[in-house]
Amino acid sequence: MNRSPADSETKPVTALCGVEGLAHLKRYYEIPGFRIGGAYDLDDPASWESGGAGGATLESLGAGPLRTACIAVGTPHRDADGRIDNAVLFSPFYSGDAGLMYFYWHSGQGGNDFCGGPAVGPGELIDTNRWFVIFADALGLWGASKPSDGLGLAFPPYSLFDCVQANYRLLRDHLGVSRIRLATGASMGAIQSYLWALMHPNFVEAIMPMGGVTETDPHLRWLFRLMSAAIESDPAWRETGGTYYHLPKEEHPWRGVMFGWSILFHSAMSFDHRIQSGWEEVQKEVFAWRMHGKEGALLVPYGRNYDAVDLLYRNRAGESLDVTGELHRIRARTLILHVADDHWVRLCMARKAQERISGSRLCAFEHPLGHYALFRAPSVFRDTIRPFLEDGPTAGNGERT
Image 1: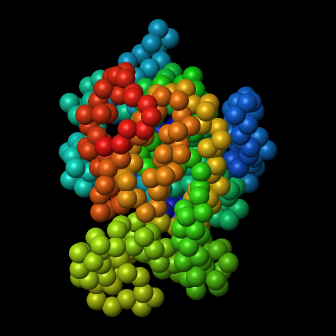
Image 2: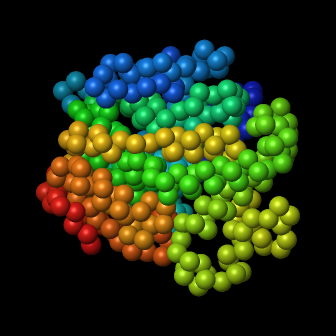
Image 3: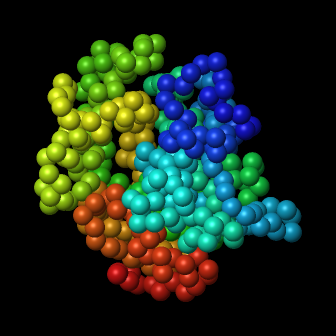
């Protein structure tokens, strides 16, 4: 299936691509009979070939098959069976999709400056003349199946295991990939990188998590719950109990979504950086139920582009993670990149993961943007990543630069 859901008669509540101008690059695929919200026993992978054991299919709830999406660029190399064996996979960050990752990291895009330069493209660090690069959506937002497609609160609660397994089926069954040379991603995309190595050890050769965790510690869980509480404080949420899709979009709890994003923005960066930015800039990310002047100006598009139920489901998926005790299983070569002064995903959590993965390496850098500086990691560690991608040695024991 390559036809966009946007071609249907029913207009989606939320957009299918994070960057409107890149929507034409995204391709969509269906995975019939995929179970969402079930159990994943790492010792019994056959039990979750079609999603977690005991989960619910979207078809059983009256919806269409699970949908996933990606943007694929580059030069595929095919093995003796005609399948692609030089794939580099980018899994999306918390609020991201294939379009936003392409916007930030692919050469010639508007987000390159924020990242300190492009990471993907002809002649770049991840050279599309040599690698087949896949930017994938994840279950729950944008072009993948999500609550705001219509099921709302009846949508099965999903896990990050579901996100990975759905995209495994995308790569294997639809794109014809036999092996991932490198699985990477920032933030929640980094978490998915760890899961790829755990769930599909014979499919993934190397992982490069950028600012991820392998368990949700109390610090991060508090952040997810604080954002969720902000969303649910919206009068539109309280009046409808989260059942509002029958109403015009301007009556949805979009102000609560803005409130939640304001909390994230102000907790991500160092306080010193905020002070130096000046109130003229800071107030654009300050939420008020009744805004005046420039207050909340940068929050408005987030209120329009994200749905309250979609974000609550995403937060719950993040809250439920804990695979630290399974990290000894990882055989993939592992390079962990981190921001030393990340206020969300603390460096101690990256160290905890690195200590449990044999032969892994940890590199960290400081930056006042905190968690958001993760987008610059490929540029900062370019000279470390290049030999790692080329099968170079990976020194263990947690080197920090």
